[in-house]
Image (cartoon, rainbow, N blue to C red; front, side, top):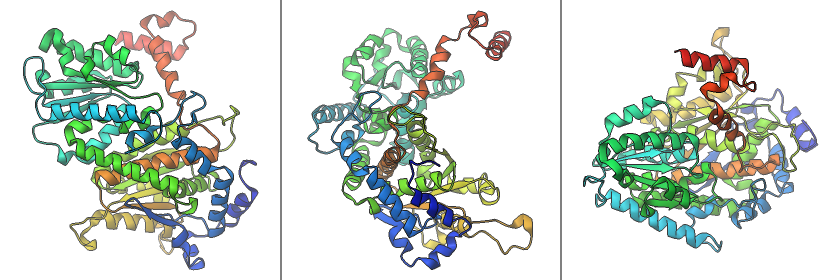
Length: 510
């Protein structure tokens, strides 16, 4: 620990060593009042964490000293807070229903364009090169151009009409494309090439492979089966994307924040514009709450403070997200990129190495599946873990019959209480494991939009507390840069290490 963090917080964490979370409930009558909050259809209960009122008030005070409120205003005003790339951070503009920011009219116009095109495809009016209506949609993307729209489509796939089908192509392994090609009718398929830079190596590789196969089916009119989403319109034209099928995003939107942009084209086609607009409305609701609510009852701030407490002061380096709703099964995948790509940084805003932990390792899966997989480790190992549960009460079942919701509550209680009275040592669970529970009123496009925006803003607040830039991702490029330079002739390159050289030879010999 170092002087970046107030001495009072460090001392309070020391005092809590050896204290059990369950005892804090009897010591603090107001525990739920300051460790819970409700807004935008989401209730957060953070009371099952090893934190007391004094520590929480100190955290809020620290957030005030770090000028979190000013940082929030600066982002929404369009200031260039992504200072390493000299860019504004305006993904929130993409879901706004009104704004005074200069770029808003262009955003509004593009939203209209993508909505119109989606409706043409969805209604069957747009035909392929041989006259067949489009029935199958394949999204070609990776990272934010894949995870965001896939999360949205998967959550509400029951709303997709039976006349449409889809796939997401992100892996450059031939196996995925071979599988997709067996499913689709190329003459009735639209491929959406999603790439913010339009130079993403993996995405370009997949697109070129698709075009090779598509030409065999429809000839030189392959571009009637393609749409593009990118910053660089000229690059899309050079690639061969027809002008009326080019949709723009902007430099001020990071890839992992791009689900609010034309990147959601596949979702608009499959789910309909009304559903996707509801998703945007939910995020806008959270944006308003984030800007207006006091820090001590602000959902993103509350979540950020609790997580930061667990990371900085209780030494938790592994975070687990467990959604107890099948519609949210892909949320942990989405969250991994959002958080670790944003806050997995090594230097502060002055470019100096930091010596405090920032983003933890994050993983997760459906809660009921996890209970029969890795939750054994969480309950009984000596690893320091923090868990976030996301639950959605069933509206058609009473509490006793709502197995998923009951299981969620049981797991959070078991993590806290353990089984210290168990006489057989192998059966003992130490308990005192921290967790936070988020409950959605119900899973709708609007509440999902609020949930995603909640985590986006939580990540931003943490970056302010940690004094880092959450909006660049230079570490992503290193492996790609090396990969594009490796060839079979690299075995003769003195800059290639012996291990890599031997693996290239193994590939050539196999």
